[in-house]
Length: 328
Image (spheres, one colour):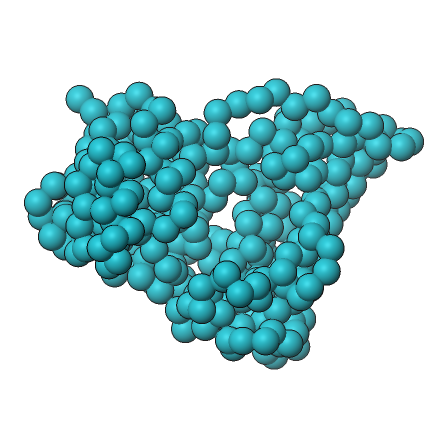
C-alpha cells in the first residue's frame, strides 16, 4: 500500500518534495499546507492534491502517513510533535530544530509514536559527495590528514526572507544554515562525529541580528582536524571541500564536480549520474518505514549537527574551545 504524503509549507522547496514523491514508488501525495492560501492552492493545482491553510486541519482530515515539514526553522518542533503524536512519519528539513533540547523532544515523540524521522541532510545523497566518499573509503590516497571546507555566498541578498536573519527564528546566521551542511558533510564523509570546536564570527550584515561570517576549527572523534570558513558578504561565490591525504588530495565542488590529485595537479573524476537527492531521501524513508528501522539521517543524527552548532556559537561567545557531547 502506498504511503499518503503531505507537504507542510508551500515555498520553493515544496516543489522538490512533490516531484520526488511523484517519481518514487510507494508514495501518493495528498495535500499541501501554507498559511498563504494562494500559495497553497497554486501548489495543490500543480500536483493534484488538496490545499489547506492549517496543518492541524490537514492532519485530522487527510491522516497522512508521511509529512514533509518545509517550514521556517522555529516552526519545526511544534509541527513535528503534532505529526509524531498522530503516528505520522517525518521528512523533516534541516536543521532539525533550533536547539538540542527541541531535538530531544522530537526524538522522544517519535519513539512514543513508533515513527521514523529522516532529517533532510542532502549532502548524503549527492553524486559528487558519494564519489568522494568511495575514493576516501578505498584507501587509494592513503590516510586522511585533514579537511578544509569553504563556502562563500551573498547571504544578505534582498530575496532572503527576514526570518532567516533573526536568530530567535532561524537559530543563527550563515553558520547555522550553511554551516549545518558543512558539519554534516564532514561527519558523513569520515563516519565520525564532531567532538571539539573553536570558532570566531563577525556581525556586519545590513539587516537582522545573525552572524555574517565565521571560521570554525573542529576535531572529529577519529582525531581528524577540519576547518570551515564561510562568508555571507558580497564577493565571489564558492563551495569547495578539500580533503588532504598522505598520498594525494580530493577537491569536491558539491553539485558540480570532483577532482583528484595523486601527487601532482588536479584531474577531473568522472561522476556517475544518479537520482536527485530528494528522490534518494524518499526512497530511504520509505524503506526505513517498511523495515521498521531508523534511516541514516535519523533524528539522533540530526541532533548531532545541532549539538555541534550550539557549541560553535558558545565558543564564539566565550572565546574558548568547546566539547561536543552526545547522549549515551
